[in-house]
Each structure stands twice: as C-alpha cells, then as structure tokens.
Length: 255
Image (cartoon, rainbow, N blue to C red):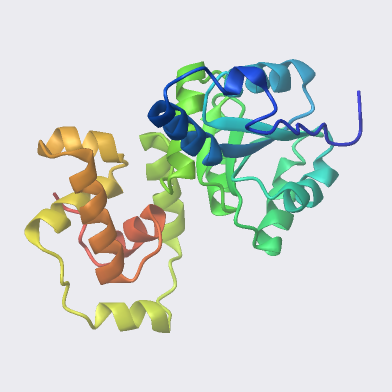
C-alpha cells in the first residue's frame, strides 16, 4: 500500500468519453459543466473504502478524485498541495488520528470543506468533528446516493448533518456559549428579520435543509436560498451553524 497520494490528472479534453459528438450548443454546455467539476481528496486507510468512493464519485459528470491519502499525518499537507473543494476524511484513519488531522487543517485555514466519515453510532465523534470544522458528517453505512448528495450540498455551502447530530452539536455548543463583545453587539440590535425569515431561522435550528424548507413552506428552493442569503446578511453570520447558535442565544428558534 503506498504511503504517498495517488494523483489523478485527467483533463477535460484528454479523455475521449468526455467530448461526445454533439451539436455546438450542447458541446459548449458540456464543456462549461466540466470546468466546474468538484475536486475531491479521499483520506482513509481502508483500500476497499477508497476504491468504492473513487468509483462512485468518478461516475458523476461533475466530480474528480484528485488524490488519495492513506496516512493521517499526510492529510494536511496533501490537502494544501492539491487544494481540493472537498476532503472526504475517514475519522478512524490511523486509529482515530483523523481528529489530529482536523485540528491541523483548522490551523492551516484552508478553503477546502471537510466531510467526515464516522463509525455508525458514535455520535460523540460526529459532534467532535463538527466542532473541529467539518461541514458534513456521514456514517459509514451511508447509501451511495446520499454520499453524492452530501458532496454537492457541502460544495454549495450547506452543512450536511442529520437532525440528531445537529441537535447535539447545538446543545453542546450553547452550554458554555460565551457572551463576548461580538454577541453583545448583536443583542443590542432589534431583529431586522421578516416573519417569513424568522420562520426559516426556526426551521434551520431544527436541522431542516433547503429542499425540506421549500417543501415545508411550499416555496421554491431558489426562494429559500434567497431568504438564507438575506438572513445571513442581516444578522452578520456566515453559515447555518452560526445562524442556529445566534437564533438559540437570541430566542429566535421558535416556529
């Protein structure tokens, strides 16, 4: 088993199957899509799991696995080297050394978004991973279609957590939530949210994702995204987890 990353250097125009014989307009659309491919690094010391993930991800038209890592100590360096959009990280790599890798990644302040793969039933590991900056958490028995969906959603800026994990993360983070200057400044503001925006905030604190919000509120998913953008801007938060913490601290979570 290699101790160094296994790179993939496929270019959009070097693989014959990537350029079908289509009309000009369709071909341009296809090439535009290929230019926006999601670049992924796999980090896990189980060859079978990496192979399964690679085969799954690379059957998609918008994803590329650019490297594999089998050693936890190499994860931060390889992630910095390849600068992927997504790092799919098995937390048990090297015997639970995935957490050390997460700590080093957080210190490096890379733009890569991390999805952690946790052993089924280890809720405490899921919560710890989120607290260390993971934007998504998957149990080891996650179905293939949900793995693909999680990659796309996290790439688009969403959190990918089940509701149990979301609730536990919020419970732990709010237990000792400090009331620092930043939070006090926010508390002095009268909430500028509309009734609809407050309703959305309440549902976000319950773990609702954009599609679920759209179905619940009978509006389009794009309308939900527009509302979320406005909410982030008005409250000065940067993601859904920070929004949920703000909402709980300021009693905005009631629907």
